[in-house]
Image (tube, rainbow, N blue to C red; front, side, top):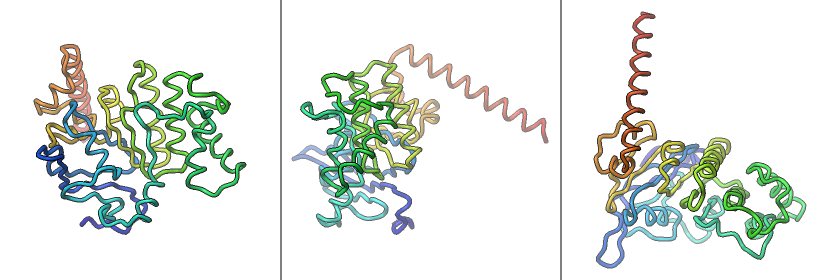
Length: 280
């Protein structure tokens, strides 16, 4: 195993040769990856590619049939109930539909994890709620109900709730689902900022190509249960993987955008090379 087993500061998630099936259907086949700390790790792919099952295996909702998942070098399969409970308290979740309680105010929704998992008094919990509300630019929204706020605001409340316990790991399931392009970019930016600011290991399951290009520090492309490609948002521009290109750059407009971006980046590389030669 990798030498970081006892280094709790790394907060990595390692996936090693995991396989998962339901009945006769194999959904994930021998997938290995490392979800890096302080970076946005994206899982992308078409419907039925296995990306959702992979995320559910990562958070312990599904048990892999074989292989292993390590949190900071500790095997998930060997953790007892108490250890898993402790791990879950270190995980923040942003659900696709935000999953807010309609009958609770914004303040009560965000305070819910604090009520469940801490013994802080009300004043301490309220202070923490106000801190995370301020961080997601929703100051003074405490007493509003979910029905009274926009879709983008609901996502930000969901992010605030996900980080209220200072998690080491953040999982986001389709964070831009149902949002307009401008709001989607704001949510992407917020997730990216929080990941870096708190040095969290963030894993995002997404179909949104803006998210891929804006926040994809580490991207895993799933195809029919296999890890078809892995790389960064910078490397994806130069990828020669045809399946990946057909998925990411499906329209003629996006194909043209990719060609223009490749030319732009190639021009920068050539300019840097010429400057280095002149300085020698």
